[in-house]
Amino acid sequence: MEWQQILGFHRIAHLGSFTKAAEATFRTQSALTQQIRSLERELDCELFERIGKRRLKLTPAGEKFLAFAEGVLASRERLVQEINEARGIHRGTLRIGAPFTTLFHLLPEVIQSYTRRWPDVELSLLDRSQQDVVNLVKKGDIDFGIVLEAMVPGDLRSVRWVTVRSVLMVPRGHPLVGQEKVSAKQMARYPLILPPRAGRRSRRSLLESLFRRHGIGFRIVMESSNVELSAVYVERGLGISFATITEGLTGLRRRKLAFVPLDHYFKPAYIAVIMRKNRKLTQAQAAFIETLTEIRPSGGSGSKKSTTCRT
Image (cartoon, rainbow, N blue to C red):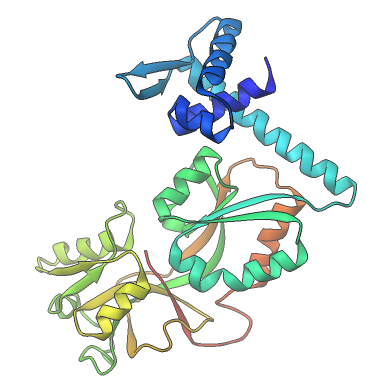
């Protein structure tokens, strides 16, 4: 069994295509095919099952070999980083996935501080939806993900970072501004700008369940996964938007917006850093978690300004 066989198999399994894997590993498709055939002969079993002309599916043996390959690749990466650290060389890679709003509002200061301390670490940031971030962490394609804690499945480890609270984003001077406890019936009087559905645990699903529980009809005038986009249309009177906020940073300060709290309906939630369970962190990876805990948007300065986070 050779290193290139393991690497090639891993790429095929994740990309679902010999052609794409060949491009990713800078080899010809025929060479990659031959390597997999040789690996299957050595193991005396098939690793892939062809479904139609273009689709590939892992066999039960392929699933087991994928787990083995991921372990080997992760061990190799840790070994290289530990050898570099023992030599006083802080190199390596760090791959992080998060939704756009988190990357835009919450992470810039963290990333700036981290790269100053660890300039030789190759950092990769991916703008993805929360569900995509969870899936990437599960597959081992990224080291850390940053999502709402409610989105984290039981087979992943999570570390709480900042607290977020549910609010309605409305234009300044809107009739709901100043209301002590806005009711579901009051909210439903206005067209709603909501994020796309993202599972039963998402905040949108909770809001829709609230309306249905009270037998209240509602109208969704727009779906937007980007809070900045929602803010543009809220400001112009298209509707009101449901969002979450975290204290400590100024968000959308140039907009003529107000935020109406919904704490009486929705308990505070948390944004968390997620990773695979039982993962041994390198110094560079542990340093990122440390930097996050040092720079919390909800702490330190005592500011009461808000940053919005789309859920």
